[in-house]
Amino acid sequence: MKKLIALAMMFMMAMGTMVFAGEEGEYKETKVRTEKGKLTFSVEAQIHKIDCRCIPDPKIKIYLPEGQEFRHDKLYFELRGNEKIIFDTTMDMEPGVICVDLQDAEEDFLQVVPEIWTERGVQKGDKVSLWLLGGDKWQDNLQKGKKDVLLRENFLELDAYETVSVPKEVILTVGADTFLWNGETKHLFEPIRRNAQGQIMVAAKDLSMVMEGTTVPQGNIQWNENTKTATLIIGSRLITMTDGNTRWFYLGHEVKAKTAPEIVDGVMYFPLREMAGIFNYPIIEWNSDTQTVRLYKA
Image 1: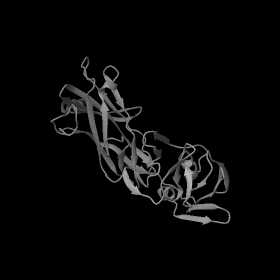
Image 2: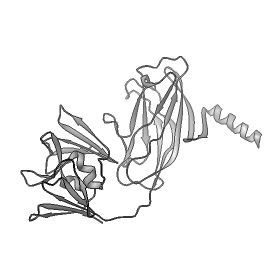
Image 3: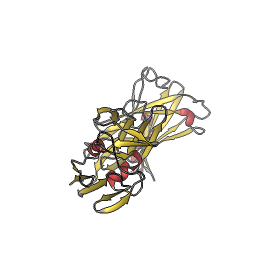
Image 4: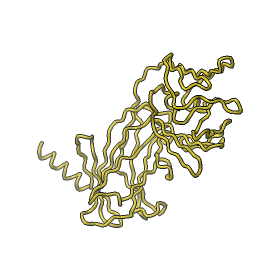
């Protein structure tokens, strides 16, 4: 048996790859010759349970040849699988493409933890592979003029949580800085507004609390002062809106809305109706007598 194991290890090393298990998960090691020497990639692979939200971040470890200078050189990776569900959060790259700058390496080692998000439609058993890109398309790529290299066939294997559907009811009142979430009173940072067109508006920083019933904001908000644009990342939802513009973006796809976001007293407000659609609330009811709006989903 020991001889068989030794032979298997020798075979894998001869092929330039090695699979081993560690405390963080299973890794596959692959050696790739680039324009500036041989790099070693150690890629983690696990089964990731998700609920159509954010995937736990897998790891890519890059080992540089000792003493080799790699500053200001880039590597480009690509996720390949179900194209409808895989997105990369790098705003200036194509969906599924990850850029790594080797100037971030400490000595001869660099660990990459890419942020990966999913859209709707995750299927149990979906698999995603990780490739190192070649070709002239990627400027400054060390793999320039060479073929793509498969680093990990099962980089991600997706498995959906079994969830129990719980009805959700949200009641908001114009001018109030509190709201009801399934009958429980919760507080807002900014009061609910009704704009000049009669549309209900909710502050961007309050959006996750209103839609998901949390006591503190979830995700993060990126603000561009020059363009007056806010980008919200809440779970798997990536929303980009610009003050006064009815054209906005959801997961990188352009959407035409009826109501534009607006800035009031330095606070960015998003239209509630559009956000209810993003967060899958099919029922929206307005009560003019009480100036309240009710969102509901079973």
